[in-house]
Length: 295
Image (cartoon, rainbow, N blue to C red; front, side):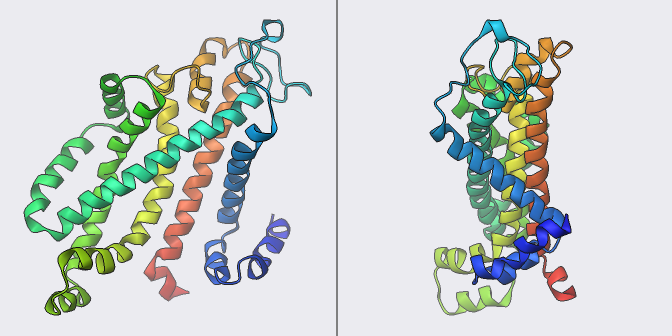
């Protein structure tokens, strides 16, 4: 593994001369570099392959239903004769889209709520009571309730997941804002007459980027897993959209006859989620001031 990874790490100076020192520290652990490579491959395949191929992932061929993996169908076929590998590749677009939109939406809303609660004392109690009330429900149960109210669709699932994971970001950002609010550079800005919105934008928000970036990677992974769970329970994305979660939910009845219909999309979910978690650990270690001093 180290033989393969070493040329990649050594080539950072040539590929990214300005960012090379940061990337070297980020990829000091080979497992983080491996996770980044896996994610790059997943994103590249999900983005490029649908443009190069005209194959229909929903094309039905009942004469080839439940075929085992072979050279013709690398991951076999499902109960309708659809190519499982083709559906995994196409489904990656939707699963990654759900993860990205959920992470972006939760970070934006959570940061706004957390900064308001942490910087303005009068808003702290009411906002945090709302956040506590939302976090008192398990994520999956809150997601089921929201999707049931909003209706089953791709965008409603993403909206529900944004609402589910916003409180997590809000609490982290609030805790960091409470510390930043009492620091000397904020007091100096107030003494100079700097307006509050400018203090928040120029002094508070830049110093929140460390916990925010870590939250992005974790929520990205959580969203992919949550979508799979919601689809498995029948309240996720509509069956005609080939996400990894809907593939597992649709093939559950045939799992005893054709295990590959569940195993292959399940491996895609696990591989992507674990890679995101490992990358998030790497980002957290990179931005941890205690580890910086240790180095």
